[in-house]
Length: 214
Ligand code: AMP
Image (tube, rainbow, N blue to C red):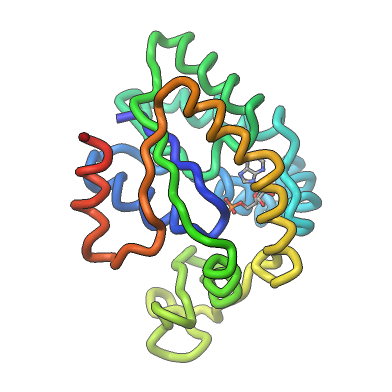
């Protein structure tokens, strides 16, 4: 299975990517995590990316495209992958097609995760994550057992810089301006399927399977 997940930030793509990873034994490739990791390590790519990420803007296409090209050349994605957070522009989508075409492959499906903006802002404002092990919590529906502390490794939880309300609004605007165009681009090729981003967790695996295999 080669799947692209589209959807605004905070729509639940990360959760859906993890479920697809388990259902189909393919790696979830999350460009946001890769860029945050590079920023954390202070690489030259990471330092540049952070300037854009902290403002809620997209990192320049060519930087992200080379990151994804390198990741897709790794052996674990030879038989499939789920891309979460990439592509975010038509240029990135064209580059993905070129990368796949060069190895005689193509996408199986574009899954669009749908959720209203006001729900997204509430959801993202309540998101907290562990800077050490990457575990993600939500103060509304998935709080840690001990306030402010990671259940997995005991580190102090943090709020991502770009999960502050004013940056969330900017990220949503950027999504509507740039990424939404992708839906039209992929729809014209007849590759898009839709799923709600607020389904109960226990219903998600069967709903995802049904949607993808329809
Ligand atoms: P996310 O965790 O997917 O919401 O991504 C966080 C931030 O990383 C975004 O607001 C962008 O600044 C950057 N980012 C992640 N993926 C991409 C991408 N495919 N293209 C450009 N910027 C990206």
